[in-house]
Structures are given as C-alpha cells and as structure tokens.
Length: 115
Image 1: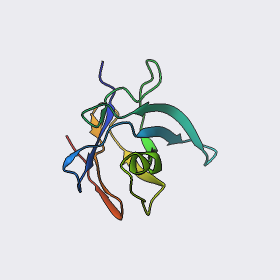
Image 2 (image 1 turned 90 degrees about the vertical axis):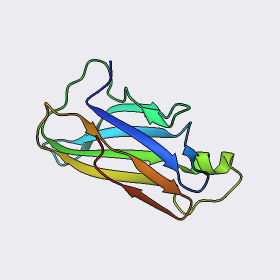
Image 3 (image 1 turned 135 degrees about the vertical axis):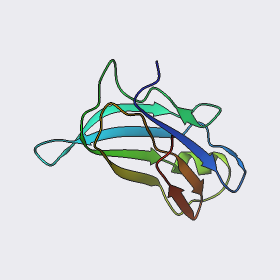
C-alpha cells in the first residue's frame, strides 16, 4: 500500500534517480517538538512509497521530511555542501495524497508539491 506521503529524489547532475538515501518523516506535535512517524530509504527508482510506520494515518498539521544526503554523495565520490536536507510542509487535507520530490545536486536542491 502506498502511504499518503511519498517522495522521489532525482540527481540533477547525473540525470538519474538517487537511490539509497535515508529519509525521516516527522510531525510537529502540540508541544512544538518533532515526533518521528516514519522513515525509509530511496529505492532504485529514487522513490519511497511507504514512509509512514505501520498503518499510521496523517492528520492536518506541519510535517518535516529530512533527507540524509552526505552518504549518497560519498558513494558517488564527490563532496556535498549539504549533509542533510529538511523539507517542512503543511498538510491541510489529510484525505489527499502528498508527494514531496527532491531535485538534488551537490551544491543545491529544489522541491515542489508533486502529484
């Protein structure tokens, strides 16, 4: 089953999916602290389709998806300016699907609300 939050990481320099990148999904709780609700590793296509732990459902609120990119660049034999990349986003309708792609290079990145 695909979770309501998914991601896809693409290496813009290589022009390929970025595999074996670990990511952690957190939700901001009522105490203004982040609670880990899932994690995963990008597959050969650069995707994580099952990042939520167990049968967890999402609710409205603020979320943070953090990618550990340093090991990926080390495996490519290059240094990266970024060691991790956090993306903070808001969910207003928990009945919708949220796709959060990451377009990556060693000196920059971009993201957008995907479909």
